Image (cartoon, rainbow, N blue to C red; front, top):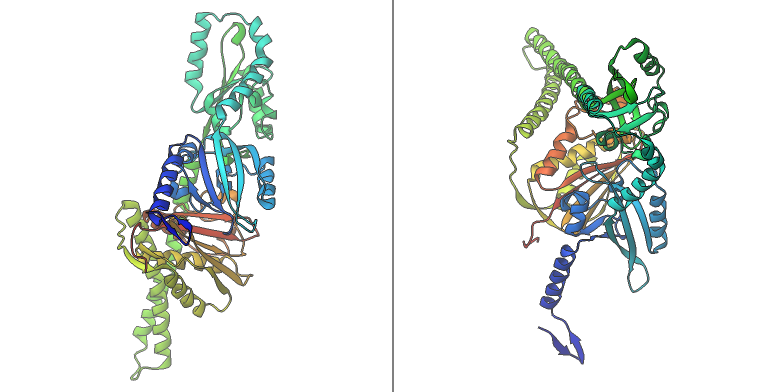
Length: 517
């Protein structure tokens, strides 16, 4: 209820709550994507998004909250529009850009973004509001119009294809195609590419058709061995089978592709055309490699402590002193160390097994999130003299979660930050509340992770190649952390650059309508 106090009209909390609820419903009903970011927090994270934005990008709200907007550009970071946005944020100005974004499933879409600052009474920018529209169809129509104009004269002079040739042509495609397909003329220029090729390599028809095969992209197909094989197809009529191409492709990263090609044995206008089928075998090969790595790592990591324990037990059996001496104590202590090491390895493998089978058990209770962070850090700091661990910010919240599992995640992330930054001293933890989520961030100044490896860092048994020799491990710790956070309804991600350190972040949802204190 509203009232008049000291001559001023006061608005009740109920009215404000009702107005806020109506506003939220109105924004969720909009067909335009709307987000709100908090400029007062580090990295200007998203604190609100409406339903239309979720539909536009394919991510759920829990996967969006706490992220910086740049996550929508994935690895496609070299866009001039990003600098425009950065300058607008620095100066606190409005801006409008058309930027390439990627949905959760990797699909490219063009985003028309209107960004505007929100300032407090002192004129300081506190928030930014972003209004977003998917203009992919318009952009595709513009590109298609350009392409149609370029090939219109060719199409005017083309003859209607005979039914027989069309049937044979389509039959040849069916026999050859596996995934992506391109058709070359005898001069190795691209005549056509199917939709799967365009989607896989994130290119347009205008980028592909009419271009020499060896000039596509950044020259990824300009391979001497491939040239020799293709140039022998026409005169010898021998197909190219299972030819592997490994390359860092624009927009999609490092991939391993399998090529199959053969000549169309027809007369007429289709004579001597070359069909090339391209299959992405990156994941398949990676799975095979990880199986081998796992067997090697597991046998090494488990065999060493077991062999040591066995040797120490044999020594203990030979040394049977009348009184317990220092040597006996030393052997006993060493045995305990290796037993602990073995138990830790087995515990991680059991955790992974439970997660894989869906039998992970969460015992959720309310606990003081900030207190647990400080206590966990205090224990590790006491045992770690090489690094200084600094905690910034606070949440001031109780969270409904499995305390032991959350501590396991924090211990793992903190241990990794120390482990992978041996030459640096500072590890910084930042705590904050972002919308109805708690956000935990831990930053180190260590070796860093490249963009390609960041996409796999939370996979089972994955280890970054260049640090594998320096830092032993099985590559399942981050996988377990990721699964624990996901099972709590949160999100875990990393932001990193090689040589500049890493920042690992996770969010946990706050339970609604509970007594937090």
